[in-house]
Image 1 (tube, rainbow, N blue to C red):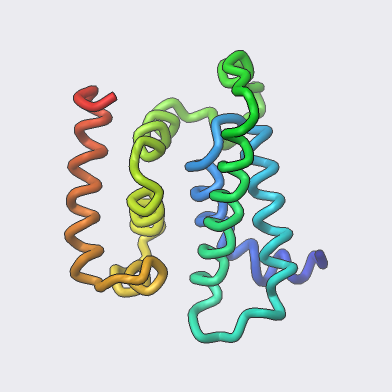
Image 2 (cartoon, rainbow, N blue to C red):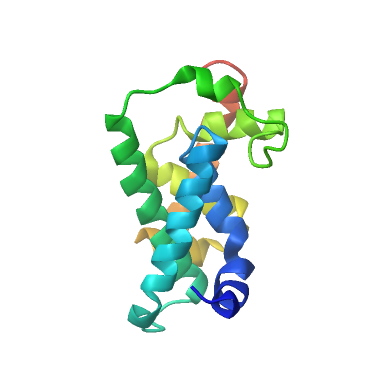
Length: 160
């Protein structure tokens, strides 16, 4: 992957790539693997982009597909819970305790609701979220309200 492609086509959308990868990982090591694989797949699929949607939509879809695929593969591996508590001091994605709590709550949502709230947190308009998910903007507005209420219940400790 060329440095120019990374700077011009991936870096401007790094925020959503990071958020999606963070929502599907539990360790810095997995996060870095997911992020690297997402960037690689975006680069590999660049020729297939037909400009029928925004580039950011394309980046989101590829990143989500990568994360879902890797998440499925990781579920087959035994989980080493020791590693989760032994995050290094220079760990950037996992060092904020409040952010960790939010991501833990987001991980309890269904895959579609997780995708919707991540797009909403990235401040995408309802119309764009609807185009990515394949539904109407009105449906997205209703779902976001329900998701927010569900996240509040989870964070308040009412849902395990």
